[in-house]
Image (cartoon, rainbow, N blue to C red; front, side, top):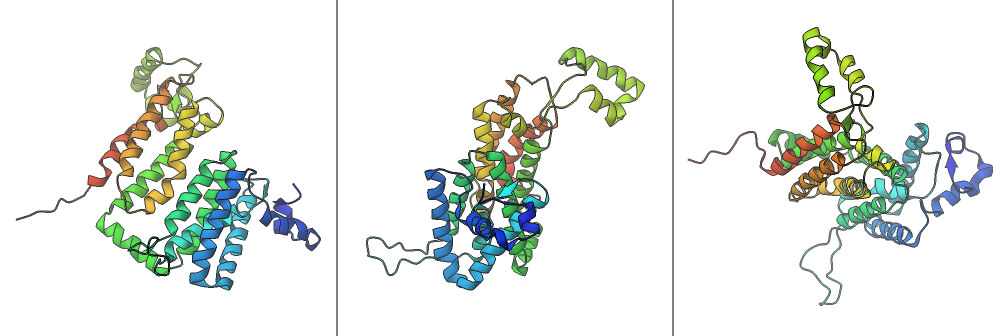
Length: 325
């Protein structure tokens, strides 16, 4: 607790608390040998490769700046009570490292260890970041910290004009990455914001509840969103239900897998993962229907069904098919 920087210490600095400022950089976000090992490995890879590419002073300024910016975001919006550890800076630096893309050459190693290509450690960084998020004991807190860190790292990477040009070319070409990004955002919307199940007013459900829709159509009430909201109140979203233990642990673990590996898969050149995400959305829809809160499908459930089809067809979705004479 003494090494945790809260809102007042960050936005109203007190030099008398220098031990807290220093200590929060040395303590891990969560205790445990496994997370400590992966955090140290992530720092080692970023420090060995990105610092060598940018220089020590530039790397340190980026690292500490991202640590400060990420902490300011989560504390300003009261997302966490206090900040501890450098995990947020490590995650934010992953996006910078992906953009810089430092390479490791094996020419100086023994012949038995050499490889005929340059190693790109940015993919090792993404793997370690995903494992850190997946192995978090307090998943909601770790997710909030990682999301804020990725946002800060993304803003720093967007300063490069080449990023905007690359995105513009992808938009014009209607690339796979554009469709994958949009549907991944839709998946996050379904998991975190869209109600999963709808129950008729008074706790009922099924066909008797649906019979009232006919009367609402003839009376005109069905044209008002307020009637739908009052007659069929929605349940919390899927991830909220999973955190509260109202969805099976297997479904919660599947949600964490989809979230943890979403960023590296979107940035990777591979496309097969969209098929896996389609199957995962189908499994989540099946797990949803065996939940004790399940009554009628709501927006979140319908979006999951759409994503089953969309992710499966995504690699072949093209606006204009090439014509060969």
